[in-house]
Length: 219
Image 1 (cartoon, rainbow, N blue to C red):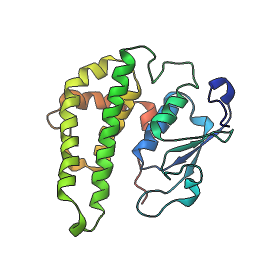
Image 2 (cartoon, rainbow, N blue to C red):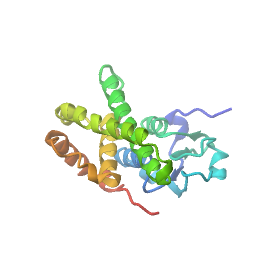
Image 3 (spheres, rainbow, N blue to C red):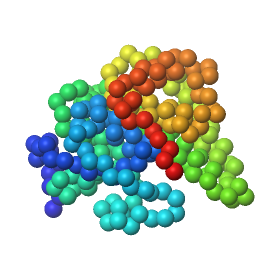
Image 4 (tube, rainbow, N blue to C red):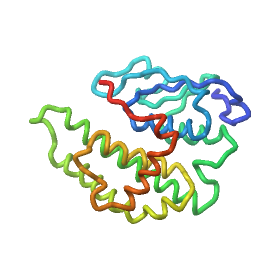
């Protein structure tokens, strides 16, 4: 039987995070852990996934073989990033990434869904680019690119509200998604014509937790 995930049961036991310095999903977890003061309780293990080569050892604890995967001291395994983030949010007494009250919780979850969806589209677009040119799907690439280009102006309309509200899971996901565009798709120049969003993202990038967990392309 899986042990309870209640904070009291978790205590201060160490956790193991299967990690990569270039994964934006992992970066969300690491930024959150730093924000919440939990980084010293997490041991990171470099885990290479993706492509067409399965990580058979990781699949023994996470059948999907994906990162981030978090192992708790009692043997419980959590995946993927939204589940891990919600668990980490139970381990501290400060302001919560997941607001308890509505409509604040609804807004935070919607913003997280948008940021997560941007990352999903960006990763698909990136992965398609690694395929041989003759096997790439131009309609799919155009669709994923359209989603990214539609999301940015939508966020421009929400930038003032982002700046005026407390830091939540929504801010985290959107901030990491825009940073991933800088990391992998700088040619898109998403800041052009989106001054309010660019100004908000500058404040996100300045957070110590964000600076402590910068993406690195270690291929």
